[in-house]
Amino acid sequence: MNLIEVRDYTEMSQKAAEYIIEKVRRIPNIKLGLATGGTPIGTYQNLIEDHQKNKTSYQNVLTFNLDEYVGLSGDNQNSYRYFMNDKLFNHIDIDKNNTFIPCGNVEDIEAECQRYEELIHHHGGVDLQVLGIGSNGHIGFNEPGTSFTSKTHVVNLTASTIEANARFFNSKEEVPTKAITMGISSIMKSKEILLLISGEKKREAMQKLLHAEVTESFPASILRNHPSVTIIADQAALAKS
Ligand code: PGA
Image 1 (cartoon, rainbow, N blue to C red):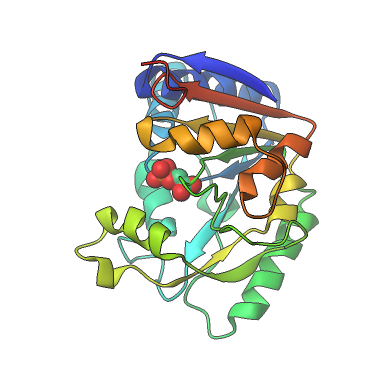
Image 2: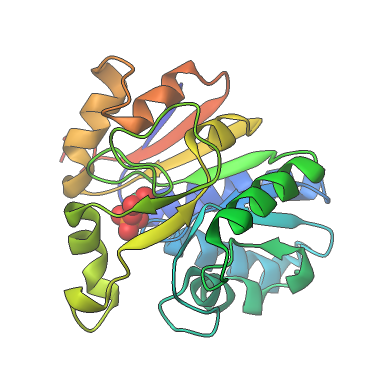
């Protein structure tokens, strides 16, 4: 794993955006795996600013998001579809038909998981997957204990994840208890991974990622077995501030 150390969240967001922009300019039909949560918001803002200033085009880019809450429709402000439209897609020249996110409010959730996995495969897989990490080591919504062989599947969110995500909702009770997520094996199939880690709250996760054994009880540890991972981490996460 290649570790890039940066000062703070601002610098992490700039570096991550530069990394993505360079790829998009070189491979205009790149397939990007995208993430939600607090971590990538600054990166997306930088992509938008660059698009406006330098006209980097996303017309031929395809995107696949990691996950979506079960039970929320795309126009619900807390859905990840809404998040992605609001934080990125509405502000760049991407064709929304080329932006894929699991559908959280379908009747047959299992069929939706299978459809999504096949969809990624059908398009030839993700070239560059942007990832955050949960303080419990989750990637996507793959909580500790998830099988490393898992494909896109339904998960019960852990109490700590519900707690962490409650900040986006009016109350903890409103946070859905289930989600659809790309599995660990789906994520590992991505040709390249860009992992963003910022803040003191991620310190323990950062240490475990770098030093703990590869174990399903800390899902992100599997990334040590991926041939092409770049981590951009700030000083607070690296316990250097
Ligand atoms: P965060 O979440 O970016 O909101 O910290 C990261 C994650 O849970 O993967």
